[in-house]
Amino acid sequence: MKLAIVCYPTFGGSGVVATMLGTALAERGHEVHFVTYKQPVRLDLLSKNIFFHEVNVEEYPLFHYQPYELALSSKLVNVVQEYGIELLHVHYAIPHAYAGYMAQQMLKDQGIRLPMVTTLHGTDITLVGNHPVYKPAVTFSINNSDVVTSVSASLKRDTIALFDSAKQIEVVPNFIDMSLYKTEFKDCDRTIMAFPQERIITHISNMRPVKRLLDVVKIFEIVEKQLPAILIMVGDGPERFVAEEYAIKAGLKLKVKWVGNSTEIDRILCFSDLFLLPSEKESFGLAALEAMANRTPVISTNTGGLPEVNEDGVSGYISDVGNIEEMAANALKILKDDQVLNHFKNAAFAKAEQYDILKIIPQYEKLYHSVLASTKYL
Image (cartoon, rainbow, N blue to C red):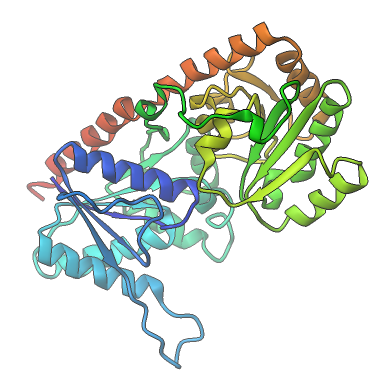
């Protein structure tokens, strides 16, 4: 099968998932073409089945904002014509599904039928997509996709509630390559970050308001009063300064370590004892899944897709948004006893195995073959 994948090439969850999906499909013998404005951060081009096509947006003084959708749709047409692409898979309804539809119409005039699968990841629906300015375009993009998938049952429910669409939505969850975590991490020396008696608690995010960074620090503040611990904060964003200031005023300056954006996420998680994710909204919770794959139990909220990933009382605990006292108490339940901690670590890993890439990729392949078969004679 020859397919094109359109995604954001950044560190965000949707781009990571799209890149992992394309790489796995290439390993299974499919020809995969990534079409975006920059090479995705986790894309390895050392494969005969993977291609990258850069979308160039030319500067033109007439436009106040450069028309990326126009450049993307034109590039898609060129790639389809040159490489004989059979299927288009776009991640995010706007601008990608919108541009994909325009490419379909241009190709249709040339007698080429290009079916399109659209995967909804969250922000394109619950935040940007629900804005009055963009809602008509998102609704149009969903309705004109051949197949629509969402990364969680929660996001599917949100989409149905927010948009006037009769389109059937298939739930295909995010995934992780568990083969990377079957053996112990070779460079997992926790003494570089903490003293032997200290527990290591970690948070990873883009530090936007929705991540509730102050809650992370306040949960840790309660925990640290009852047992020796440090907090590793990975990432950067608009809420970092406020949370950092609070930590200093609370006397936690030496206990909270801000490491910024890092490419060593697995190394940090491998020696972590607990992962905090008190988000206001998560369509899936890929960061939680990555923690669990590293045998790190999770304390999270019960919002969005998080309860589907983090099983309460098994891989960690879930609480209402803002209930920092309960989240701190649950953290202490896990951390105070070595035997309890090891039980949760093993259970978190077992839960993560349910989302192994080898179990999820066939679901996408089945959808691809289904849509190709249904459009073959149209």
